[in-house]
Length: 607
Image 1 (tube, rainbow, N blue to C red):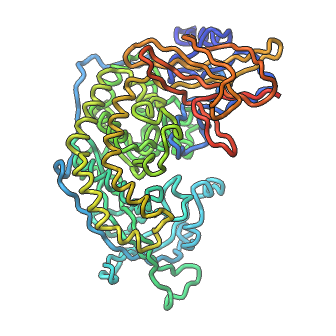
Image 2: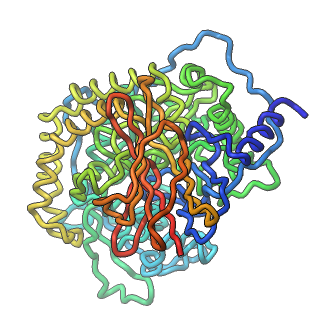
Image 3: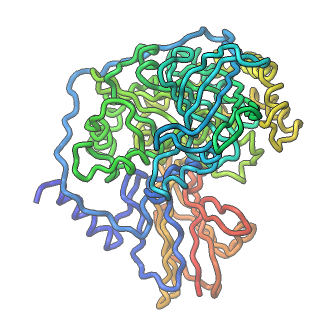
């Protein structure tokens, strides 16, 4: 029996005897060791691997809390570098800080009709009807339709020759939206030196230009890697489904933002390695997932792999799997991962930027992983920033959203970010990056000038086309004026989040009818300043927690209490509190019909 197998076997025995509870989010899940009778267990802490993508951006790292760890064959020890660590920055910036971007509006005209192949023999109505889930249920690739794309102005087409293309809808969660986004692939020609057009509708963004705003700021920051963007107004003439070409007319589909496709052309423009490892992250928290494997593995499933991340570069996944093994190997220090396997400055600026613009749906998706072929280092490239200023859009108060959504805690459930945040070096780099961004790139004056420029350039398109949403102008104006102050608030939240303990997960309570007792356990919280942590436990039958039936505080990570309140549905909330009084709730939450979400609590039912 080798050493690693022995360690895993001992941990399993300790877990089954109630002596071992993981102390870190990257450890196995919390489990319960008391028989469960007449109890409704809480849902899994996070989604099942089949339930991807993850539009909410909530942690998906935990297994069902009732699962037991699986003992697997021990892996060989990973050799770590012995040379002195060195920084390998990639500096890309098209404009200097404060310089205004190009915000010209391009006008395109698209004529679509059924193609001559099975792949494109579909109608425009079909293209706009089915969602990503529909295609998954049907077991077919996304439908395409043939088209010809023309350049023009608001007055009409100026280039009568046109460019042959195919068109499909694009996006994941956005595929269910009433207004679609489109991917247009040009057959022979290029448009603005690009063969693939990603026309994004950005339906969650009521301003419709936050993605471009984010990329335009990134374009100024040397430490970040960004993509080109372009405002586009699209008109579509549908000749499919037997439409009469003599009477069919172009219909205004409104404002889109074209985002540069991160392909060989973009890599060349950015002076990046065309032989790189490049992955578009869809739902990936750096756990050692069974469906992330080499393409040469006989059990490799491309669909399952793509649910996690899509390979856009070198088809050999060996380097990615090595990174997964590294961050999940507790014998390798957090500092080693920071020094040798990621570019600290790049990831610190990326994370700081996402926190400052409150783009919370970036903890396990909506970014690219990039690693050049001649380096062990990994970098992050921003992708899909239309979720920015999420709480400002929804006008949610702090009590209506999970407390861990603010600051660094939003990234605590992803293994790689968890390991980095354990190091003071990375936390210091993060604060330094956030301060630089706030003081030099996201200043109130520059942000206000940019937003006003966008509004002046494309506001008339948004207000005069099919884009006009049920979004009162007063809310539109309130959000527009509120963004500069919101960036300041998000900076303060980032700094404040480093004072709080980290979020954790609660196991499902178990009830023992013989003793009339309930047993609950949870993961340990962590304090960035090594302060002592205790846990406040509250039990209630009121999802608002306006009254409690039982309250206590302990330094342990489990508790047993007597159930004295008869049958019903009950909630157990656990809050971590450090010695300076800063608190943090759990990742765990409950969704209740007719109520909403109970944050930081587990639930049990006594019949």
